[in-house]
Length: 91
Image (cartoon, rainbow, N blue to C red; front, side, top):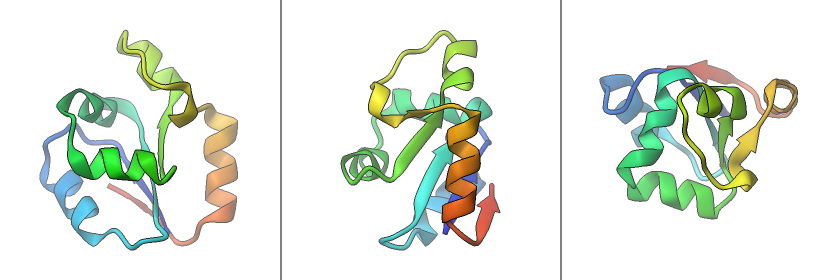
């Protein structure tokens, strides 16, 4: 399953998503959800270590942030993830 989170951290949707993750699910942070990276949440760090956390590069740049390049994806990368992981849930 692919979870696309767009709401700012913290939010009810953000928390519900992280609570429902399965061991094979992937998470994409877009829009204001990218601010979650500033919170150093251990759940997000675990996803990053497992290479299951992806952040849309344009949203990082639009907010003047910088992160590890291994998590960054462009919109083409987002489309590829949607083709690989099903179903897709947007939070």
